[in-house]
Length: 249
Image (cartoon, rainbow, N blue to C red):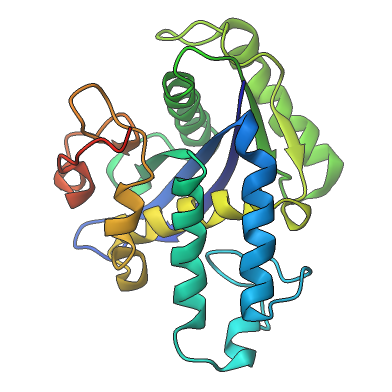
């Protein structure tokens, strides 16, 4: 059994001709590594004196805990260590990035397509095992959460044109991210990946370590497998994430 933790983000594209980017990503853990990762995260907090109630996010809420600490490089260090710990605990990541400025699909239709793409890539990353998908609770209260989950049911019940519904064994679950460091990791990975695609230098600085986390295909590449960039006919598809990288398994 594997558990996928997912989150979403929207960020402005900074590259020429790029619109707003919609991102949806997930970090997938073997069941046996869930508690060990939590223990490692607890040790990371202890090492740097970070309280348990500080939620790690790509875009930290105001007031930013790390800015208040005013320790040069601490936030960058924690980001890198979280990704390193995920790799050490056998996690893999899949992220879908949709350029809203280069497609006619917008709003709910774009979100539905991105979710479909992510579902297909999570299924592939399960490596023929069964899986559960947990997302951060959507903002907007119970009604919005119920509406969002209802949209996912056709996928988990019937699959998509490319994958059967056999691998994800339950409807999509939701949980508050401030209680789950696996969801905080999903926020970090999704946010950093979309930021890197957008041209944000802080995201781009994490490209080398993120490459080691992404799920990849038989040929050792992540393009279209661990990272789906859409529309595929744009210059975004040549982004450096698609470079061939050696397998770590």
